[in-house]
Amino acid sequence: MSMAVNPKSEEGQALRKLFPLLTMPAQQFKELCSDCHVTEIPRGSYLFNLGDQPESFIYLIKGDVSLEGGEFLLETISAGADTAKFALAHQFPRKVSARALGKVSFISLGLDVFDKTDQDYNEQKNVYMVENDQDSEADASTDWLAALLQSPVFQRLPAVNLQQVLMSLEEVTFKKGQVIFQQGDVGDYCFLIKKGSCSLSRKASERAKEISYLELSEGETFGEQAILTGERRNMTVTAVTDMQASRIDAERFIKFIKEPALKYIDYSDLQQEREQNPELLILDIRPSDEYNKQHIDGSRNIPFFSLRMFVNELIKEPGKIIIVCADGKSSDAAAFELIKRRMNAVVLNGGMQSLPNAEAVEAIDEEETELAVEEVTEPSDALDIPDDKEFSLQEENQTLKEDNERLRAELDLFKKQYRLLYKQTEKLKAALDKLQAR
Image (tube, rainbow, N blue to C red; front, top):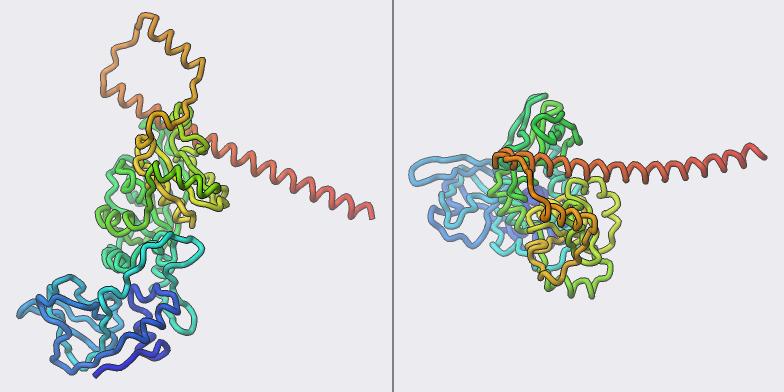
């Protein structure tokens, strides 16, 4: 027996709390309800069998089912439980059989129901929307998920990817003061804070004092940068309070989140894009010394470690932001950071390495040229430094340069804020003088 679904009925409300249906805009959900039907089966009947090649996703609406592998009972699932918010045994072909333990109601949705056309992303138009009106009232326990699903990064993901991500999340807890990971660790997980807060800190060198940068709280993510760049952690993260978080491993993060969320452009297409879109910004995130040696004509330089300082300024950019780095790896992390803040960031595929040599603008410093000539012509009395020590010093020097760039950017920002406050103060003084003169 089967019947159509009314979005406002009990079945419709139950359907609305399932993933990824929870993320659908209201109109799209109503259209889906008009095309799907609730099926009822008696106790002992099978929803599907082991080895089936499915033609649909099966969602449990009422009752209890047992998932069985041959003669073994693997799991019992009840409608309304967290495990029932996802499609039953979604692997293809079916790895288990599903048998009704009593009277059961379920719906079947075609495998293509969540497919989306490939269209240019518009940050002002929600791809997914968590409904909180009378048509759908999500449980309080899913509030953090609702916030997650409304984030710009997750709104870029196909619905099937969303389901895979949500099913892959692993719950973890940390005590106040516990180190979650340290600077220099391998980037193995990305974390989402469900409850509590943590601090990010960094050392310029082993002997340097640890500097605290910022705190993150509920709904924010951390740990993705090392996964996106392929480098080791550049920050230490410590729980400021007792924390609850969800995490996803690097392999699934890249497959289900990075690949569909980030967009790329080749240099040959960039030239055409610039002609068609005069508001396009090319943002070079390399250190200033590298940018000054060679860069794309008309680009702007904000070193990667200073990027957070300029977010409020960049968010005002009306067009696309093309991110450029040396080889494209750091650009992934920068673009991800800007996308989280609802900016339309695109990565230049291959970075500066993808440019023909003649296409880049070179800035030659005469003083540096003279020094270079002196170094060549004068005999060298350099110390014989072991290779590993020299590499360590070079790495420390690069870290100090990056921190210096960040501090300069912060100083510039504070100067701008000071000038703005000074102007506002002068206006208030003038207004006060007028009032006193009356």
